[in-house]
Image (cartoon, rainbow, N blue to C red; front, side, top):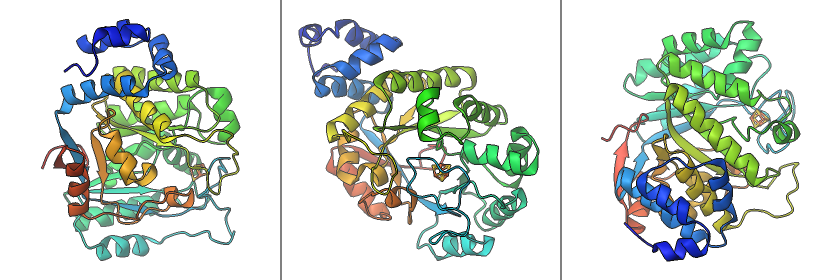
Amino acid sequence: MRLFNSDYYANMGLADIRDKVEVGERLSFEDGIKLFECPEPLAVGALAHMVRTRLHGDKAFYVVNQHVNYTNVCVNGCVFCAYQREEGQEGGFVLSKEDVIAKIDSAALTPREIHIVGGCHPKLKLDYFEDILNAIKERLPEVVLKCFTAVEIAHFAQLENISTHEVLTRLKTAGLDMLPGGGAEIFAPETREQICPRKSTAKEWLAVHEEAHALGLKTNCTMLFGHIESIEDRIDHLIQLRESQDRGGGYTCFIPLPFLTENSQLTIENPLTGLDELRAIAISRLMLDNIPHIKAYWVMLGVKQAQAALKFGADDFDGTVVEEKIGHEAGATSEQGMTRSELTEMIKGCGCTPVERDGFFNEI
Ligand code: SF4
């Protein structure tokens, strides 16, 4: 498929990148920088759409899923975070195991995937999480449990004074199937130090994911962009994920997360435009040649921008969600959840074919 001819790309100095993309050759760090510097976002989007179409045709995936956030109390205090509260601070909450189960029981759907994440609480011990996973799997033995970021896993290990490998092994025994991709933020050490100095380092984040892959667990991965990071930081981040995937192969989906500015301590001089978001999604598709899926996470992007992203390299629309707290604390204006028919209509509305999937991206 050729949306633009070779002269068009040659005029922008992207002829070599276009040729590489056409034959499926890996892009370099310098290529990634050039794509961010290209004056024409549609040219970048067309290349990403070519790759997305080669991989998935016109399919756009969605999942009947439910998010549960068990606490917003967190010891890390990341500068960008609008969600976190200190222990005892007004607005802080912790769900009991019974609260979590009640949320799942009361949802008007049978989820294929349950996504559970929360803050790094100073007192919640590993048996609390094991109990929750066991109780959910008793009720919903087929559900894919995608729970706890690598940052939470490292925090549990520290609280219990055991290794992250042991934490993952115990949680897997309790029913854990996947890790979500959160906590990656941006890997570049100087930038990471400024926005989340107490959080696991990039090396630690990657090590937990690679341990999970070695245990047979699938994982997702993310990048938080549009704060104080440079273009070089973004490309470095994508290449580190790509190299990690080369080592283990367990990443299923990459989720590019635009930074939402509301209720954050970070002041941003030039907030992202819609085209900035689409360009970053497209470049993610082009750089991550070994990660099968790119998510247009409608909660953070907004539904209309997520629809546009399906034409800029993304192939997954995420899911029904039911209730979401983290993005909404940061100013997300999307609904809390969507029905299956709303999701399929949104996908059809931008000319794609909706395909229901489970948490592992198996088509249903
Ligand atoms: S981003 Fe996560 S780890 Fe950082 S303060 Fe917020 S909840 Fe805690």
